[in-house]
Length: 488
Image 1: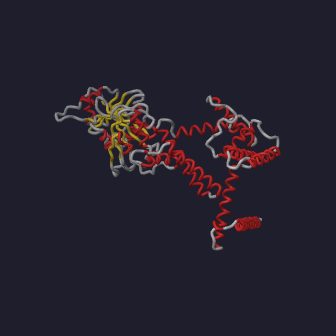
Image 2: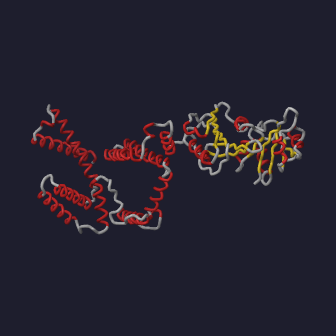
Image 3: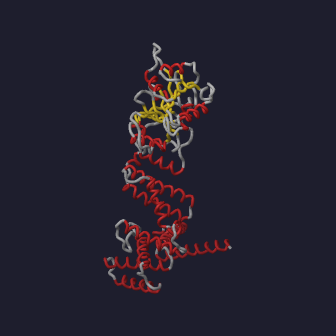
């Protein structure tokens, strides 16, 4: 592919053609001018070249910008083309911007003392918008509005360019247009069209590059991308002091709290609250990803790509050729795949390896029980489990109250009851949480009834407690019966 330069004719007080202009015209394969008798054509002749007019190319002198762009593109297929115009070459609106939009390579512009002239004269700007000029090093903390012209100076290498692109991505859509101007050694600027997303991934950038970002009247990215952008803002200089000082370790408890609050919303059947709590959980994920990116360990894209790969890998019955017709078959495949993954990483491939020890004790016991049973360590039927329950109860009765032996026997009994739940197809963690919720509900109702009688539950005797407890249970049964009758 050839090249295109847009050259503005400038002469000094004595009428001598600017040396940079003459040099650029002279080395072009083709020098295009609008007419043969204008100042541009004379400049081409003074530079020792022969002008090629619009008429020679089948164009009218006032040909529309689109036609000029198309013709120049055709000429530049395998040649170096210079479009020469008297004064600034940008008086023909649409030529520069049209070339930038159509060409896959850059367009050179001569002779300009400052890239701001390109901004003001060449890019068909919205003149109703203000302009902000920011140094690349301070862009992350700079305050500016998206509806202004933004000029980013001091982009001296690819690393700086990428940081500029990432900073812009907080406020602009990925496809938002950016024009890069690189100063040329012989004067003028090399212009190329890019986007915010492309700038954030650029691999090469010349010293002294300037980025022009057009105004955006469009709201910033919405959805998940906007959440990521907001978290970036919170963690950036000038963001939120609390968010900026958080680490993986300080956020760990919040991750746990938000997860439990989401579970509580599920148990309460409150879908509106669930939507809110899931957002809190997602915020924790994005915060951890941002911290990971700051440490150079991982970023949100890696988090997402990892879970996508894991889902595909662990569902070969959906994304591969394996078969699994029941949930039990799916779980057997799942456990085998996870075991293989641990072995590939050089980790312990034992039956119980990989069960997270930081789980709540009841859930941990349930997972251990399931894993051992899947390996064949299992009673032949539930009768054996019931026998073990009675055995553990007898051993607990025989233990000294408050002793270490009693603590061991309580643990043994609880673990055995977990196995009963598994044999009955009951999730022990869920069952106990429901029972806890039921206990809280009934006890609070007892407190209410006691207050109606003019007393406090803390002043009740055991017989009065039993009476109120049975009363509350009876009310719940009656309410449940009424609901069943209404449903039928």
